[in-house]
Every structure is written in structure tokens, then in C-alpha cells.
Length: 231
Image (cartoon, rainbow, N blue to C red):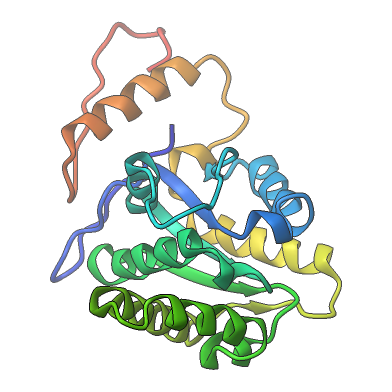
């Protein structure tokens, strides 16, 4: 379990994070290709990454545990692909991620896989086709049209963030760049501490305790015991 230490700033405190990274992606496009390789790269670097392996991406409703995982992630990597906007699940996930950016200081990094940033920002090409269907579906539904508007806003706002455009480029190079960047961002997390022997259980116990406390801000952990026991 990964829980990063909090650091105080002049005006606010950073929350404790359970995960280093949350991956948002369209499974049919990238699960067995780019996202799969990226996940392995992050894992091999010791970065604790949440990837929903059983995601069905059907309908609007996102499971509560998935929403919680988004909230508890320090970084959200959003992998935009041609069919991303065809999934209301993915779009609602993105809205939640952008909310966490504003409310919790989550770092959001967009990745453009086989799509141009302008297509995502302006909802053109495959994104235009998807949104035409949504607007037809919710034509007489005020609440539905508000949801569509929220999706459009989330897409446009996400594109304005610094990210990676890997269209027609060597994927492995960009995966390495992304993993390197995440390593720097998350190097203070417990999951980034590698090559330590015999303390896995202790780290998990401390991580569980910190998560249960649900506290933000600076915490001081006192560890007491006899000399020579591996404190």
C-alpha cells in the first residue's frame, strides 16, 4: 500500500495518497498495447499504480471503489484514444479526475495516443461522432445535456494541461519519459522505496493505519522498540 507523506505549505496541506498513479483509458484501444506496457513500466519502477483490470466501461455509473481510487491517487494519467469519448464511463471518470485536480491538488497528465490534442479539445473527428450521438440521445433531456456539457468542458480543460502527444511516434521512448516523470513526482511515496528487506509487513501496517486515520497535513510517526530489532 502506498501512502505518501504530507508536506505543509503556507496555505494548505497535501492529502495522504493511497496510490501513486491512476490510469484512465479506453480498454478496447490501449489495454493490450500502450496502456499495458505503460502499466508494466510503472510497476517495474516501483510506482504503485491503480489499473482497473475488470472495467467494463458500460453505462454511466462508476463503482464507488473506483471513484475512491481516483480520489486517493496522487497522479492521474489520462490516455486519450480514438474511442475514449464513445465511453460514458471514461467521460465520467475524466470529470471526476478534473474535480480532484481542483479540490485535492491531484496532478493530471494527458497522453494523446493515436489522436491529436486538437481533436480532443474541439471534439472533432471520432470525438465529434461520439458527441453527436450523445446530443441526439439527450436532445429532450435537460439533465442529460448538462452532463454532455460537463464532458466537453472536462475534455477541453484536460488538453490545456502539460502532457504527451505520441501520435505516430515511438511508443517505448515516450513510455520511458512518462515513467521517469512519474518517478520524480512520486519519489516521496512508500511504494518508491525499493530494495529494503524484511519490512514489507511493517510498511503495510503503517500504511493501513495512516489510511484509516483519514488525516491530512503533517504527521509525526513515533516508532518505539528495543535496539537491534530493525526499527
